[in-house]
Amino acid sequence: MRFPRATRERIALVLSISEIDRVRALTGRDRFRGAMTSTFEMVDAVLPPQLRGSGWKPASPRNTAAGDEDSSARPELTVPSIAEPGHDDALLAELIVDGCGDDSDGMT
Image (cartoon, rainbow, N blue to C red):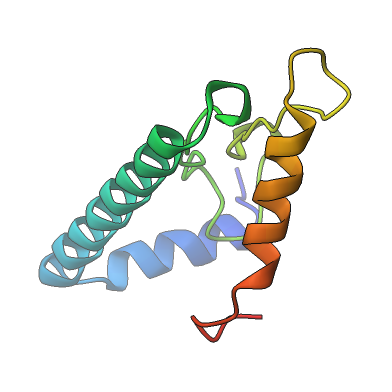
């Protein structure tokens, strides 16, 4: 059985990585996931209930390194529609204005 080229390249890459580099990469991944989770938890804590999303969920690492990304493994973030009943239009407008008006962080 002959494996596809992308699979052979992934295998060669895994075999070329030292144990120290592997541990560093896994540690970095875990720190990143922890930081993203805590960031989304903080954001959800300050948002009113109707604007809270489902949080951050990491994508499955299966084949994403080689570009074989499975669309079903992508993180899902839910944003409520403004047309849904129960939304405070004034609050939404205030959040939009506040979010667009401050450029002090240098981000555009």
